[in-house]
Amino acid sequence: MEEIRKKVASLEGSGWQIRFSWVKAHTGIHGKELADKIAKEAAQSTATHFEYTRITKSCQSHIAAEEAKQKWQAEWTASNKAASIKQYFPSVQNRLGIKVTLNAKLAAVLNGHGKTWSYLNRFHLRDDARCICGHNEQTMNHLLFHCETTNKQREVLKHQINQEQKWIEIKEKLISKHKKVFSEFIDTIDFELLLQNEQ
Image 1 (cartoon, one colour):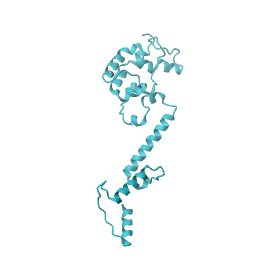
Image 2 (tube, one colour; image 1 turned 90 degrees about the vertical axis):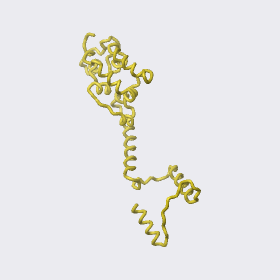
Image 3 (cartoon, helix red, strand yellow; image 1 turned 60 degrees about the horizontal axis):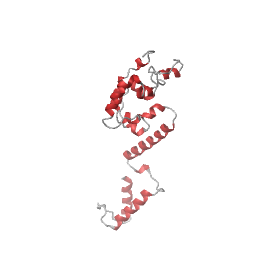
Image 4 (cartoon, one colour; image 1 turned 180 degrees about the horizontal axis):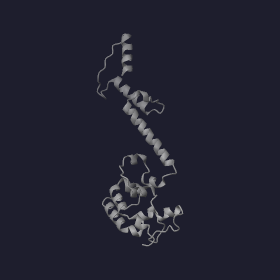
């Protein structure tokens, strides 16, 4: 605003008479239509240089936040770490929009580092990784989606989700669309019992 005042003062000092008035859009005024045309051409041009120091602080903050999210997403996608969590939260933008209250069980499920036999076997703390149900390794995925010992809890989850759509094993949707019932499903699983040697 100060810069505009200086320019107006400079023009007035040269004999110009400056008046500002509101002009209704699309009224057929030649100067107005020409200004709109030039502004649109500049906005669509890839050669236009954006001077971020000339915009409001709130707008600068918004632009900086969006650029930070894009950079964060690129780094998150490229990283070879947190593979389990990425299945639930592939999008940084979506994760920021989901309020998650973590407890020990939910954290173990999301990061895949719960005390399953497969996890203990990986660190040579157990010889056998096979689940007590007798089918497949006892991984977090197996307990959540396939294990016979969690069938009862899983059926409740399926029933609740079927109120909205067909049962799916897409983790992103379980946490974004069905967070409450999914968390309740996890809370009903007795992970300590599943670590016993006998069913």
